[in-house]
Length: 113
Length: 113
Image (cartoon, rainbow over all chains, first blue to last red):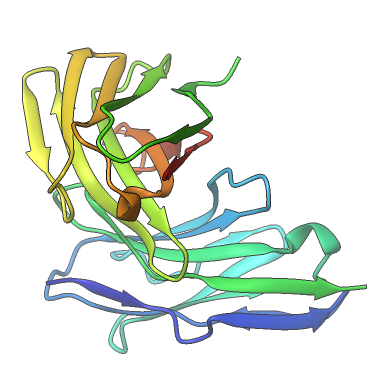
């Protein structure tokens, strides 16, 4: 069975710093999708970034980028120039061919002024 | 207007009561999902439906049932609510033609006393 592990339950960084959230997953499949979702205090689930497993190039969305290491089954999220609005719970997620998403347990990120 | 809506947004009920959570979408997606979020556990899949005639159990379907009334509507029922069903419930939709991204509703916070 596929699993997603986020080893950092909670993190705090100063505003404008760079922070990296870790995620590892386990699967025997070769084609899949990986996602990072953000859940601010409003509780809305917001897609931050996605990565297709067949693409070697790491995805980037403005200040958000990933380090996708397929062989190591690692998918970390880097937030550059962190902002107060980045304070949220972040979920790493894996989607298999069945279109079902498996979520990690989340990392609560605090951006400190 | 929001593409995926959930009603009610918040609900407090008593043990043994029947509860229905409703989800509607205007995105035209065939695939719909119900998730449950508990602190420290991330989101877990309860049921999913890939079209009106297709209903499938997810990871934690015991104690829940669903109804897909139309492409746009997917309801989750708790036949006899119990306190450990207190959680945040999310509905989501997806279109496999669009990077398999899932679009989430705003969530329903359910408290069972």
